[in-house]
Amino acid sequence: MTELVQILRDKRDLPDKGLVELLETDNQSLVEELKECARETAIESFGKEVFLRGLIEWSNVCRNDCLYCGIRCSNANIQRYTLTREQILSCCELAYSSGIRTFVLQGGENPSSAQNLVPVVAEIHASWPDSAITLSLGELPFELYEKLRIAGADRYLLRHETANPVHYAMLHPITMGQGTRLKCLYQLRELCYQTGMGMMVGSPFQKTEYLVEDIRLIQMFRPEMIGIGPFIPHKDTKFADFPAGSAELTMRLYSILRLMLPKANIPSTTALSSVLPDGRIKGILAGANVIMPNFTPPQYRDAYSLYEGKSADPLEEVQKELSAEGYFTRPNRGDYNN
Ligand code: SF4
Image 1: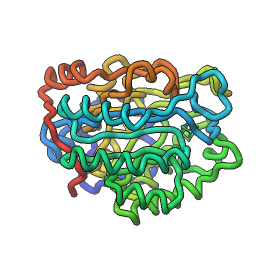
Image 2: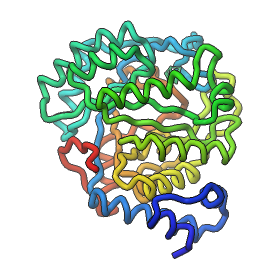
Image 3: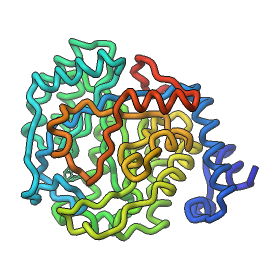
Image 4: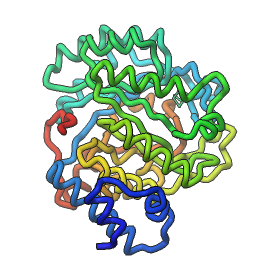
């Protein structure tokens, strides 16, 4: 085995120079070795089970104006929606009957509507007590994170997007600060949420050294979940003409982070399968262990356009792909288990 991969596997760490080499190398056999080693590590942690999360895109209303995002508040070209309590519960019912035991409620950042989710989260928790609830609703006041946690939410995903403050400022309006994002992550941890962070790969102006900073931040925070996907341009943003991020680089990051944090839950993201037709399974073979089929009512999916060309990830197709590679799913919450 190449020394770099061996050190990363054995020490769960690598100097910056080694990380840069793994991220930039053209040596395909080194890349294959990295992925294989990450795949074996994932199998040691989870066997050949892949955890399923049922994604419910609850609302595309957002108060923020992130420069890369299709549902940013200044985009007047999309139809805004927010699912009702009844719609959310029927998504959960469908997901549960399909064998899903984690519901992921994801939406734009909108504290007043998120407040209305507190009783809905409590109802989901009471109706399906053997299932986990993950939220991804952006930066909210501590008191609201706390109410949602008490209502029954178990996990919270808040991507940091980039660890480099200068890069963060290039991707976000001046009203958004990286410090707030990080403060929220620590608050979520304080409330004992299983916490997730992550970034876009290939976002405008990104450099390899920024990705190394991302890796270091993740390594330091040790999140229970790591959400990483390639940047995909959206026509209604100022980055419309920028190229999409690399699927290959995204998978290398899954592999590196799998070797650093063997028990972390790492989804093979929808964004990856949107840029690479067999991306879902390739992400799993590179060390990811989670897939998130979409249970949003079909009539709203196009309006939840964070980026364009979003893959649908239908459950039956996901299961067929997984079983062809000897992987399986089962009704399981798939909690972080160190
Ligand atoms: S990335 Fe998130 S917070 Fe930013 S505009 Fe899009 S939905 Fe809102």
